[in-house]
Length: 76
Image 1 (cartoon, rainbow, N blue to C red):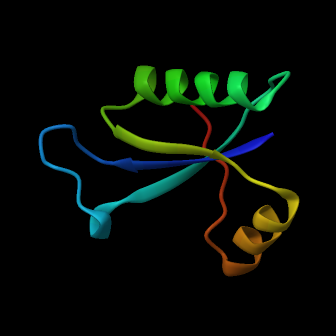
Image 2: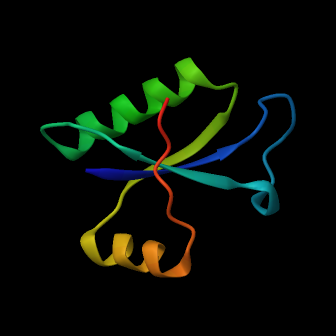
Image 3: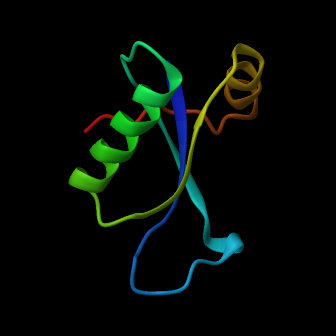
């Protein structure tokens, strides 16, 4: 399952919508909730990012992300 993680690069400042970034993770999970938890844990362990939202991408949403050129899987 592919998850999109919205984050701010630092926890030191108040979040601003204009500075929100995203990364994509391929998570092996038995359900959506487990995948969200795993994605959050991985990003928290490997980065100093302030996570705002973890979202499971539907097939249509994933295709859209690929078409716009924004899609690139992140590996830690």
